[in-house]
Amino acid sequence: METLAMHISNGIINGPVAAVFAALALAALTLCVLRGRRDLDDRLAPMAGLVAAFIFAVQMLNFPIFTAGVSGHLLGGALAALLVGPWVGALCVAVVLVVQALVFGDGGVAMLGLNITNMALLGTAAAYLLVALLLRVLPRTPAGLAVTAFVSSVLSVLVASQGFVVQYWLGGTADLGGNLVGLAGTMAGAHLLIGIGEGLITATTVVTVAKVRPDLVYALRGLRPAAAPAVPAVGGVR
Image 1 (cartoon, rainbow, N blue to C red):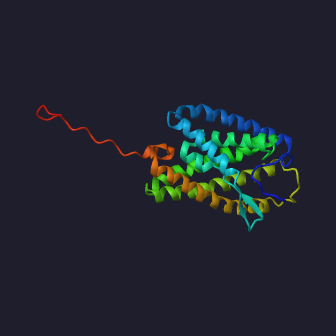
Image 2 (cartoon, rainbow, N blue to C red; image 1 turned 90 degrees about the vertical axis):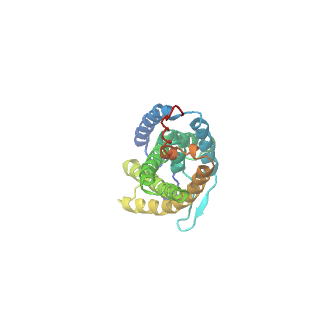
Image 3 (cartoon, helix red, strand yellow; image 1 turned 45 degrees about the vertical axis):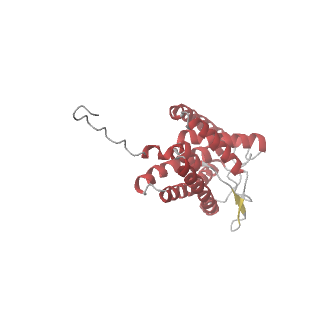
């Protein structure tokens, strides 16, 4: 394949497979809407808009991967999961992908279900699962949060890239001569480097937000210190 873009263009995957993943993506996004409504509050609602706008802006900036002859950009799954949670985060990434496909032609419109599945659903879910695990074992410091953001970003990008490999195995329009393992390795190698770049961006962004407003980081909401116990009344004085 001449390019290794995560935004799948029209014609790379056949119509029936694209239609199946479109239906799966629609069902998953419906679930995200239903579950995400429970999380939305006065802080998360505006934060979701800011996250979507930030991911959209950063995705427009590509950085070269010289060893692979391609360029990469932030996918945003880990960043969204850390800041607004998995349900709302998946919706943020999906909205960005829809706008890019319809307005900028980045990824085929007929392939939206495939792209949303890989980057918005698989990437965000994998990132948040690892975030939930790492925040239980790493120190809850800026350094621990940075490591969590970096590692979850790398995993998110790798999982998204392998999602494409599975989709190509199911309905790729070009014959790879049975070299699916080669495709998987090539995608993993290129996107590992992309994931490192994304990890640095995500770690810097999340740690910066956490230092200023830790209450705006969804992943840290369950880590608040317990409230001090009430002092019992003694001698009629509270």
